[in-house]
Length: 165
Image (cartoon, rainbow, N blue to C red; front, top):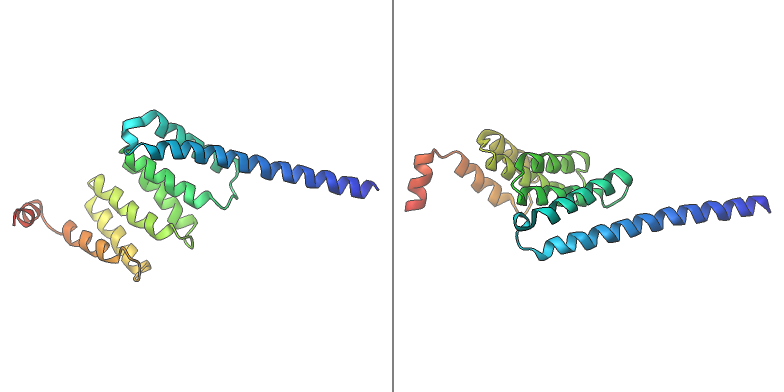
């Protein structure tokens, strides 16, 4: 009888943990949805920062949750929207290095290269795009990555001339 009661108690505790995680995820998604209603995160920095804190708290509280790669990726997107390109690049790096087999890993690497461009780190951006091409030769963003490398290889004068024509 004690074994059955102990087993039922353990099930209740485990179920309560899952319910808490689900509730926390639902709250996070509702907050995220509010931010998505705003076209530009920079227009509502307070809400964007709230979402970032919610992502961080969820990731710290539930480090083994299956949503972690997507939440890290979304964090990178929000940071990019706020113009925090270095922090964004770090979030994207974490996605494609710690979760390389997820669907968001290739896009995270591509976005990381964009962040390096925004930071005017042209060589690092070029190397990251090349890494993307090598790792994901059949990805739909392949032609964009090749095009970005071509643009990064141009001098400022060549770039101006190219867009004037």
